[in-house]
Amino acid sequence: MTHIYDLGVIGGGVHGATVALFAARGGMDVALFDRGPLCREASGVNAGTLTMQMTRVALIPYALKAHAMWASAREWLGHDVGVVVCDGLSIAFTEGEAEILSFRAGKRREAGAPIELVTGARAKAIEPGLSNDILLAGYCRIDGFANAYLTGLAYRNALLQAGVHLNEGTPVLGVERENDYFALRTRTRTVRVRRIVLAGGVWIEPMLAWLGVRLPIRTLVNQLAVTERIAPVMRTVVGIASGLLSLKQYPHGTVVIGGGWQGIGDRDRGGVELVPDRLVGNVRLACHAIPALRGARLARAWAGLEAETSDALPAVGPIPGVPNAYVCGSVHSGYTSGPYFARLLADLILGHEPEMPLFPIDRMLASPNATATV
Ligand SMILES: Cc1cc2nc3c(=O)[nH]c(=O)nc-3n(C[C@H](O)[C@H](O)[C@H](O)COP(=O)(O)OP(=O)(O)OC[C@H]3O[C@@H](n4cnc5c(N)ncnc54)[C@H](O)[C@@H]3O)c2cc1C
Image (cartoon, rainbow, N blue to C red; front, top):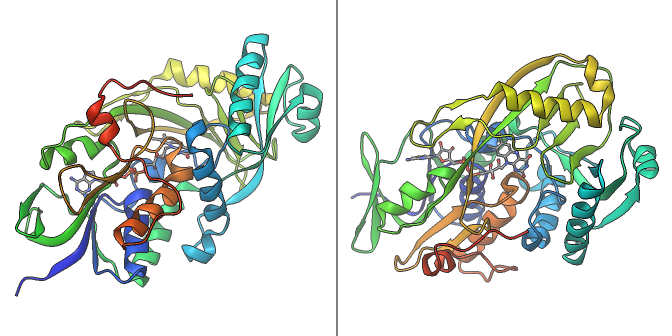
């Protein structure tokens, strides 16, 4: 007789892998599918910042919970992803940036993020590596970073220990409803599951189309660069009011430079191309913020695809009109907050009331042109 899983999860980034992990620990028989290795798209190539200052205001309460999850990753994930908890500074060089910073820091503080505004001199006392030209900074003690490259390895071990049936290198080609279950088509077989979670990152849009649901998902192509190993030049995570910079130095000495400077790429083609002029702009800004970086050489640059809904808020919850089908993704600063959102969804699937509200996609189906929030 054909085996029917309790849950099939399609997409093995932080969202899909976390739903699968908690559902399996809650007693479900779970199969997880990824067309490649686990966490090798956005969840494995991101900048690893665990941030409040880059997180959308509405998501701050979730990001606080998520940060606590990452800080205790050894307990719930059981494996190390190189999490470093440290201070974070969002800096302003100009009056215009200071104004943006004050407004955004105020909103995030109201939402619960412990961000205080500090003078340039105080920022420099917190982060001696900073430029002398800082006017104002947002200072948050709840910040930090992880090593995104370790994410897949950590989840693979945890998922196998939890008894999840892992199918890496297995693209799902389509999903059909058959009586009380879903039939997932792969290249070699059809797998039957009672419930499904679509967690395909930027590929959520074509996945939802399998079920007749149209939800536009924008693809961002974020570029990153990393320096060679250098002597310590900074001890905090540094961003900028405009959002165009993220900087941190890993314990082994490399500095990762990001800030969402866009490359070229799309989800259908899959590949990405760097735009050197924009990388240079990103690196110049980094050297302006931390002058000691001027002597460092870049070791590598790359890009990855990040998903964004029309209102820049998550797509996490049941899929309208399709019983037992769920979507999980498009979370802004999704490496930081993704695991917490996914755990909430796993709770719902297990029949428990999630401790915070989800972000069902009904709102965007009713109003496809909703605009982005702060
Ligand atoms: C360059 C970059 C830097 C970033 N920096 C940060 C940061 O510093 N801090 C932060 O909080 N967030 C950051 N983000 C955002 C964060 O990485 C993402 O929000 C998060 O990782 C998304 O996770 P996901 O599980 O939704 O998607 P993904 O990690 O993209 O996972 C989706 C998975 O679905 C699989 N898949 C697709 N189609 C199929 C199919 N047909 N069958 C089977 N599997 C399929 C893919 O192979 C992939 O593994 C960054 C993103 C990028 C790209």
